[in-house]
Image (tube, protein in one colour):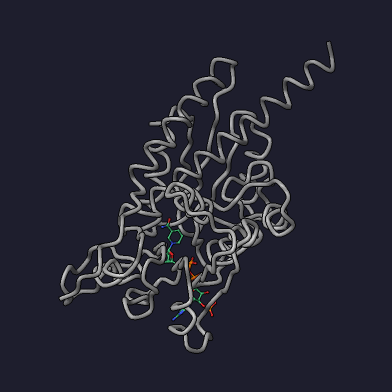
Length: 302
Ligand code: NAP
């Protein structure tokens, strides 16, 4: 038995609902000015998890009053045709954001596909122009998952300045941009990966831990300093034959870590909904940028 207090939960569903209300209001205001924000979601193949993700993204758009188009292609859709379709969408004035769901089938090069999306419509923030903007601290689209994590930290009044933030994982879509966003907000950042020696010694020093590894129980209670903020990005399925088989879980041993952490995010209901919320935010912002550009150019021609 322990007397340690339970961590406070950072509820991604509640925070998302609050942010999506504001998104819906802004979308409504844009519509009143004759511009409906639009997102195109492209799915190639029949990966079951991807099908769920794209459905959720499209539904979230509809609920917030954004226009969305879901295009599904079969697993052997040629790369050249996908690139051609993206080029059309780059010029489609009803579409402000383009998202190609990853992973793609092996014959399609993800880097070519991402490079084909116009940076101004790259609402996933994966294009090298947006990744470079983040690196240099310039405006651009932020990748949705780490952007959502920053919003969660802000929601609990966590000022990351001067804090030691430890990021587990260094992928281009989560770990690296996460580290850069924390650094930009003046945290002292340590990035860990599969070659990191003595992970526990590092995580025990952390005021903030973001776990984005993709393996359950990567972070356990003995690895966390009392009072630390723990954000669980991981999305894993509990394997057959184990208690709770088939259920979604994160990278963090939730039951154990919530005994020592100050704050913790659940899985499901934590970072997942925030990722979609930030996708809506980026799409809306892409449309708002276009609206202000249109107004400026109209004024210029008067
Ligand atoms: P990824 O590309 O597979 O990257 C995983 C990272 O974890 C790699 O950098 C890897 O190191 C590192 N790693 C592996 N074992 C480790 C260990 N024992 N200790 C520390 N680091 C270790 O995965 P990802 O795309 O970043 O996604 C990570 C997880 O987040 C997955 O579960 C994914 O499903 C989930 N996810 C969730 C959302 C959401 O909205 N909630 C969004 C995106 C991703 P190396 O670089 O050395 O291989």
